[in-house]
Length: 149
Image (tube, rainbow, N blue to C red):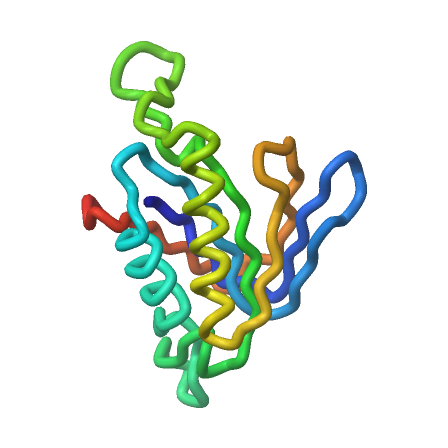
């Protein structure tokens, strides 16, 4: 399972020019599910993300987590995070999970994040979406539940 985590002041996701979800300060997570991913990957990544100390404390140091600031979370599915561009010019998405299993783990990730007591908003699975955000910092972190990077 892979995630692009962005520290944001606000973000929203639209489908067909209609805003379907919006949050204030917190994190926007673009989430990709791989063929080999399991519930263990869900738990690891959810806990890692909500506890990442990437928000500034009073001294300006990144010492606070999403939980500490009582921030919000926007989760958007993005299978293209498993795009392999090492050969040729067209990405291969063979590493991405098929839609049925990806949806199950995507929803499990959302449920796990909600268990931490934070506000969680979502995109629409398998829809063409427009994600708009104000990346604060900018701070962008790449995570992989298999610890590839």
